[in-house]
Length: 227
Image (cartoon, rainbow, N blue to C red; front, top):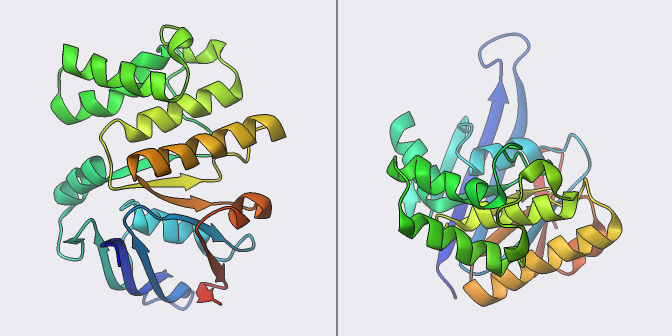
């Protein structure tokens, strides 16, 4: 079996802890994702998917349980260490691409590298150019994000997520804001990156057609993993 890039054991999340309005939204989540897997997370609205993704993405802390990412136990890490791990091991693709509209496609892809190293250099540019080529947008490398189509912008977002060579990419409804043709192209791009680079993907989606084409589907209902 491939090494687990993501391991959740007994993950719980409660809000307003210790108050009369305390509410637990995740109830002992156990999930293992192996290196190179392409997994879908599905479930109805309000099931806890977004909360779970925020915890996996180290944007929120669980109330209980343990989380390991790329072999690192996150339980004892302070905020600075969590930020470092997030920047090194996790790529994000959102429903809304969150590109900087005044920046070019190439500049947007370079941003995570700039944040990590604090200065731009020719190596960063070469890395960004290679990724822009991989997502088939080389002719648009110097185009500003706000002049590109929705599908093109989401391709730039995928390239940006891959810039730091993450252990796992978390994709939150990455096709939800696209037309059918663009959505298919973005999904196929992520799938090809998964197969060619061995990058692990965890894809949250309401699109059951796409979910069925993933390696595995994880269903969340009322804050629990169900068969």
